[in-house]
Length: 377
Image (tube, rainbow, N blue to C red; front, side, top):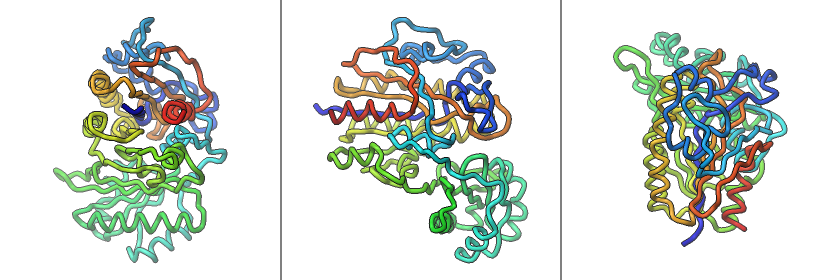
């Protein structure tokens, strides 16, 4: 039986501010995991507790466990930034010395070129905003003009929202690809173009998360995924992994409709896939709860993930290894609606590897080191 690695990223589940958090408009009080637990009267995560999550940091409701069954650590983010692409790339061994660029307003040249190439006649927005709020603010004008809503955030993103009952989702995707090419051709340094489709449901503009699509910049050099590919290993990306790496090094992709779907598809992959690396992103913690400052929803999402840990173990062979980690923070108790510059937890379980306390590592790329050594050495 061959060795397999499973990496599950709980998007934005940070565990404490990075020392340089103040440089990113955050502060040292940011701590996604601990602050959610404090605000919501503790977390009920018996499986995570068994793995040793409470040994990494103090979390209300999660006891320290001297008989932990998984290796545990806290990982620092070495790259400059606090976004999804930066975190995932570093996790796979690519550390960015220069951060992606952020904008308060996209340059007139970008907008003019976008309007010209899409023939959309005009745009609405062009300022930093919460995605749920801006579609409520600009929907009436969108319905009258049919102009796409363009906005950004503290992250390096160019987001395009529109009512897909007014303009087909295929047109939205086409416009996003045009925007990606415009931004790449003149090196504007923007990490992701994101399609944000919505519909009017019960009279309210409502985002359709299952139809969201990310168009990331291509990694500038090889990641662990490419190294595995060159060594004839197969990588299965579940969720938005394929989008984050623009398919580079990803042999097969499975899209998901949310965390529950992603967890179930990961279970199915552990049971049936011949992939050497199963790489899953669980986005709801970030997209639905972190950005919307919904600590109660975030808590429930973590507890749902906890309920799957034994299911993963039961399907794993003696040659399987599973890592659960995160890519950055998005503390729902902190001000604003943006990501927070945080360290992340690391938990690794295998039936044949003795668990140990690893301590503090200086980079998320520790994940790639572990997977590389496991699959290729």
